[in-house]
Image (cartoon, rainbow, N blue to C red; front, side, top):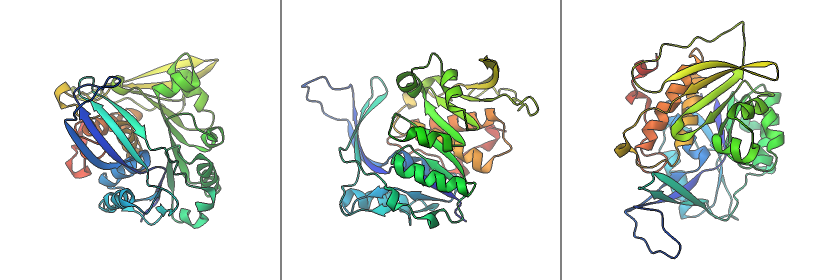
Length: 331
């Protein structure tokens, strides 16, 4: 039974690998050009599908060649139900041109100008039939607020990929049970003095906040529950390392889990496109299938999934299937 809904953007990525980022007025030959599925929601849905989670994806595309390719890629993932994908004859399907700089191992994304918003009128209440969990990618925020309110009426758990400042987020954030955001959001949008300050700001209504920090790993912050202290497993001699600390801010105690990035050899780093989406896929898998896991197990698993992704070009080519993962790494 499909009980998970992913809401947000799916697009087509044009990914050009170059030896170095082009200078102004420079002509540069690409090493390769890859055309593949992308978009935050589409990527996270694909990650979950390969981890064995059956889900529905709600996104909006146009009736064009790019839209056909987006839909084809999603339909090839056996656990994605595409019946809620909206095809709007008035829009051009979204695309992203991505420049992958092999010298600095960074990527720069240029998004299509057209804004393919899912509208409030696109939301039908029956789309939540049998749904028990919704993940939002912070696109189409006005419609997302409407859908999240419907979800709360049905006691459906919700999570949010908080990537950048957008309209209506002040209404959407309080409706979330889990929030995953980035160090850039903390620094550039919240302008807080620390990541923990940002987490405290977002923890007004949700259970935990995760902040990803790229090659520096991630942190998970939650209110300290002295009656239910989650135990940290002994750090293994491989993979990500996790520590737990208690921080007091304005008289309130918070548990802060810090997780290093899963080690990867520099020569194996191919493309960082979609790493955040795959990390979120790992987090959601744990929330949906590994409720008994501790926070350190959740962070290590998500870090591992992101490490797998970084080895392949594009957001999806190297996403692992559940059958290929040695789960003993996290037990």
